[in-house]
Length: 360
Image (cartoon, rainbow, N blue to C red; front, side, top):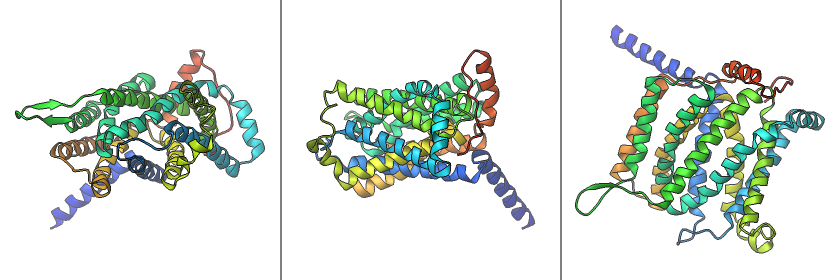
């Protein structure tokens, strides 16, 4: 009995150590859970707003633009409430250079947010979230390249298992009993969405923890969302809708409860993602997205009658194994750990931003 109790205590201590490695501060765990909850509800709500032919009554580009505007206003309000309007103006004037750095992720996030509606019109929420997990390995490669941190063999094994889990979900058995991989143009769009999400996430983390490490998160959000609004206006111009997207006919379908909820939820996602990348990292963000699949599969079955196939079950199991392996040896890439990289970039003639300490 003494051995049994000692062994259990040892296991509990090991689990606690893993938890502390993943979430060094309490707020990190809260950010992780809220991030998952917001993305799960986003996918389900977007699906719920579709017509029987899987199209939307509202202009999706308008919804994305309104969400970006709401994120901008929210970031300003949060900073002003924590500080003051005068300090906000001072920070904006000091950090003007950041608006140029954030233009690249803004373009990629614009692409990602608009493709999200297209992808969810073709795939059910569970399949969508599973396929989006291809970004895990891509994120790992970009993470090593940009932050110059080598992932361990165990970390790469967990990433590869996660990718295999994604592939299994798209396997189908045909009439003659052979297994084939179901690939179509929408899978290509998913791949484009994955690439834009990965590069935007890792590059944003790089800015938050190096070039803008001394800049309040909400101030950085302001520059990102200003760039995002510009990108979405360019998209609306390309579609010939820039003069009509705010018309009554265009806004009427947007003013429904579900669509307004999508805008509010997308606003919260934007704020939480910035905090996630500031206090955690892109690799853990990918695993949070993977864990969304389990809850999405159950909720999609309950609300939309989407069946959970055998390949989906295998896929979810592989994702769980990958998550367990990763939790044993997580990536540590805090803002403090990125200072040396930032100094190296400064020595390579990159702009240096000097300010008061981060207040968010």
